[in-house]
Length: 299
Image (tube, rainbow, N blue to C red; front, side, top):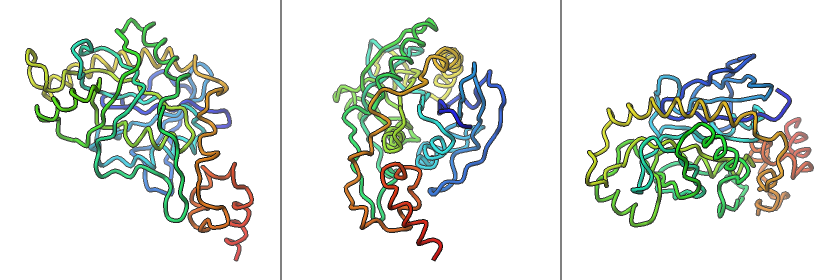
């Protein structure tokens, strides 16, 4: 696949992408282990697309079992420059109803034990996260969602909890006090890693429930979530059908150059093994280091 692709991260209920031509299933090896599943590559109205079922086909992986680094690395290695993250969420606001669509602009990471960077082991990078969502991609998602007939909320904060359990009422009330808009279990550290990989990232958040804070609604149950999940999957497919042809093909946002000034370590101090492992990310900025690493591998 030579042209830049649109990556789609399928969330709960979305395990395949309909309407693709030239479909191939591709197993990707990454320096960080195995992704959630094979990637489905193909074309949609002439646009290259890479799809990954985040939890694996059949929903085999809990949120904390996801290999976020491998998932994002695999998308980038297959040529993706944009990533649309389809995610089931709970609403934390009275005005955001089940079956609504949210395109959040901010994330709050409340997870505790997930690997959240490609860097370390001798190479340090500090990527800016003040604005974690690509505005251009978010614009396209909002437009496509409105065209699908969904009720759309643009902006707001997605809080990501560890899971796989849902929140207690005490936790849910605390999160509401923080002013967050929706709650989920998968967009962190996914969004952080997409930034490090210089990918345009935005979330199509599909509301299934009111979490457990709402006094006049029953506490969230798996049965209720699944019922709304199935209805939301139809919405997600319609939005994706509309947005994929509208994305790109070129990128004019800041996302393609996020690592330009983020790497703090002197290239002369790069450990060869770490530099070699991060070639996909660092090659365009440190070509001399890449040549040295190649020479070192020859002995």
